[in-house]
Image 1 (tube, rainbow, N blue to C red):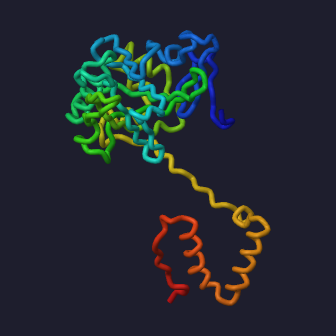
Image 2 (image 1 turned 120 degrees about the horizontal axis):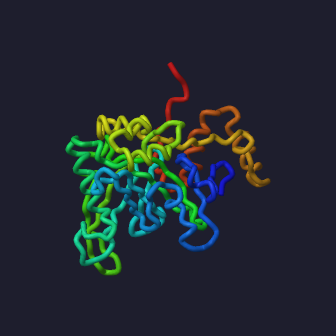
Image 3 (image 1 turned 30 degrees about the vertical axis):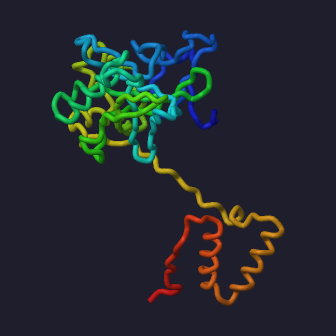
Length: 292
């Protein structure tokens, strides 16, 4: 595990809040008692990738939902684009010969209901928060990827939940492809107080909710504020750029000598070098070597 990623030990899970990218550690008994989410989240079940927790005031409505994924299934490539905050998630109909809504966990039916509410713009308070976790590959450890809302302002209502056919092991069946957005909840963690209020006192849960969730409940798709994390490309230092072996140093020195009195001429040389290094580069338009 990287040293710069915060982690919470199994013994401290019950008191821990949810922090984006934090790792929550499983137990060491090598059985179901090591399961993290059941211990970390109030009323959460112990199995399946789609875990629903009901509200006390209406058991047909969800307080919150956990989406638990390995992010590594080739047939069902769940994926989080950290630069845009968009999360692609596949439903739970993965058996041929069954209707798309006929699933054991009822995940696809819930997806259908949630996106119908979202696209109607009514009763948005009945949409449950989605908590996204992924397996780390180490024991039963899991990583929290964030609080998500269904849909995205840049994905149209006819594209955010799509039923499609797929063939696996020569069997055909339908499943859902759903799009969510991880919300920018700022520096404050997702509190257990909010999760408990969603279950036990739903009508007052917004008192404890993150501001990003309040905006979603108020404005729907247009209130979604994504957690965007652009990749920071570091420019190598001059020292790192010039690292080479003895033969490389001789080549660099010959290039310097050749273009000593014509530095702008090196641009043509550079394009030739790039094209030889990567065949994807096929054409260049060089700018003028001077300005008016």
